[in-house]
Image (tube, rainbow over all chains, first blue to last red; front, side, top):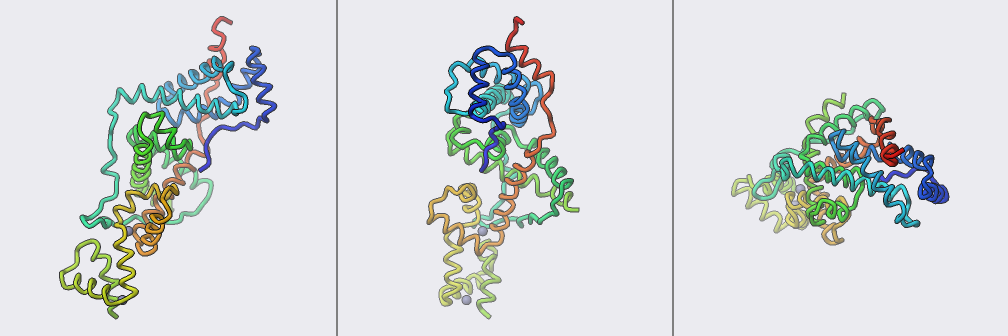
Length: 208
Length: 122
Ligand SMILES: [Zn+2]
Ligand SMILES: [Zn+2]
């Protein structure tokens, strides 16, 4: 699976130059750094945090902690990849401080498939018909899918975003959410199953 | 003729809704017909519930080869699990696709706020 790591079209030489100029305190270099990476990272923090004010604080925290850590940045890693990690961490820190206050362990049991005592499917499996492809259908579908993802409980929504949208590894997810990698895998599985169930009754709306 | 009847009854056999007589027929036929017996053996390797429970490992390519082969044999004979798999993969695909083009640009004042916060004195 491709990761969603932001990758501006900077060459390694351009990155090294930008880094050197920022370390020297060049304002124009900071402008360029924030203006180039900002929009991509804004997208990342907005996916993790539903609240816009939280996202603003998280992105600002991310850039400020990156500025402080510029001196210790190891050349060899890509500046944009490093910044992506910092932004995900800042957003998750904010997410954890918020979700701790709200109902945390909500389950999606009622959105999981049902089985008979003998382990067979208890209900017919909805068919995902091929729908015509086109820009307007894709846009409509995209809006519908994002809306349904928002309906997932936070602790389930977050792992779907981190794994299937941001492309983090299960190990990364486990570490950041303080669960075992196996628990992270199971939660991602439940999230996909629940989203599938939420999407199924909506799909027929789009097939016209 | 009896192979046909076997095929018709097989699904309900696993669901557990067959009458005793039909159930005996399915067992007897699986014991005497080589092809249907092989089908029955595959169907008994893994239940739909177990397959769906571990479907993420199959989709993410994390199953060992022998386990993967069991999943594939089941998917070859079970239309329901195959349909479930298809919907599961489509769900992953549309979730990713829905975020390929974000509608929301970064607020310009946020960019200015970040740059200003770097030098609070200036
Ligand atoms: Zn037969
Ligand atoms: Zn099955």
